[in-house]
Length: 413
Ligand SMILES: [Zn+2]
Image 1 (tube, rainbow, N blue to C red):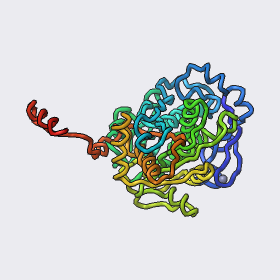
Image 2: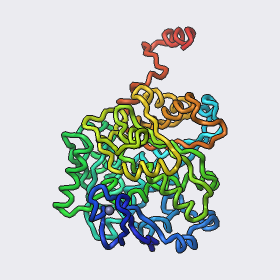
Image 3: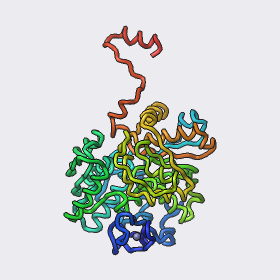
Image 4: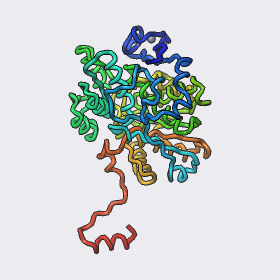
């Protein structure tokens, strides 16, 4: 059973029950994103160190009492969540940092963190009696919903920009959802998906519209805390587009603090690309988020010119004592190779943005040597091979002749 107490509007602070509204605050409209609050006294009896230690569940469902769903779903058999947290082998040392970890969420079934939210959408749609789910996405949320829905046997309509990376569109083709390649950007696909979902009565998984998506994404923070024996990290570095993952991370740690399971909140460092940084600008200036007409970056997953979760994200980053940083496309591409060659982890550009930020902050002296830092790798590099091909690497083209290879090696290759 679910222990939800109420849904609270991030804009006006009004409280609702689940029966009052399925999506946003009826008074505030699209800006009135709802936050899910639990009856923590009741959760406490079902969620503690002992119960987690004895659990054999190696997926996000091990945190069921803190999730907005009634039961562990039988319809989904893919393993979602419980991804590895790797302590850095070389990057930390090279940056004079002693304690750095990488949370590799590219290891989820469709190779991105979005699976954590899609799983909740599928369960929630089933509980509410919907047969069809729709989503607008830069690519990952779409391929994630399509893959998990294929596993659960649910119909999907997916709206993605036609410019989405080939790897993500290939996943959509393979997973068999109905795919609309929108001749426009993500922000346009978002509005299109909303209006058509209303017309046909589809359940909507859009991020920062459906209040339960943050609840799925927060499981990444629950895992990080548990994998660090509930010693919360000091700093978590998170790539930011719409701002839902960063709010999910904040929510996960906040829930654990409310239950008395961790004793401090990590500071959250939000990372955006130079060509699309409305949330970082708002953090720096203190002004409301100014949307961008023509956002640009190679890191497609974080290209959201109209960040839908900006109110909650800016609030969460500030409350954590955190900050924002931008990185260039060149730094992002470089970071793909830096992470791959030093740690053996392959990140898509948006995920590599977190590594680029780690490097930049370390060089600027914004991180202390003993600080315990986690960088969330939000998606796998095979999602976007075209950009990965921009990494210089160590590549030498030769004729199929031993002499050529021997000569190359003798010359220091
Ligand atoms: Zn409201």
